Length: 157
Image 1 (tube, rainbow, N blue to C red):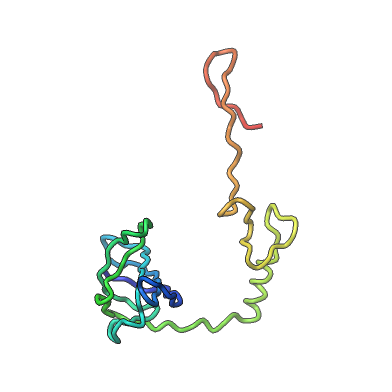
Image 2: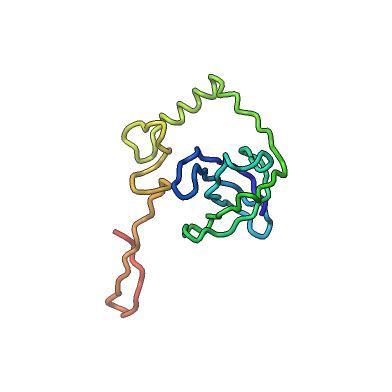
């Protein structure tokens, strides 16, 4: 498979695998595109030609992990990493003062249902108990009309 490496976690000691990292990548194969999770990777023990960086496109062999039920999890063969392409990404230069003011104004605006300003880590319009900030409408009440004997949809009260 071919994959674009997007995240490489900090090394974590493991009794079973030694010092390992977990990697997130975008699978680039046209027949199975999407996110994949590669674990375990003993990165320090990969030879120089097999070591990769963030945003490298690599070719590798991996199979579904028998010990991880997540569909995106793959167990890579450590000797199969081959770098195909290395992308050099320029770091963001930072926000200008005008851009920073716009961001702060956005963060401080009240949401539709908010009573107080939110913190920088709260999404606009988010409500407790919902992941997206969207609260579904109440379910309609379904009742039986007494005059016709048929079922009808009544509006929620």
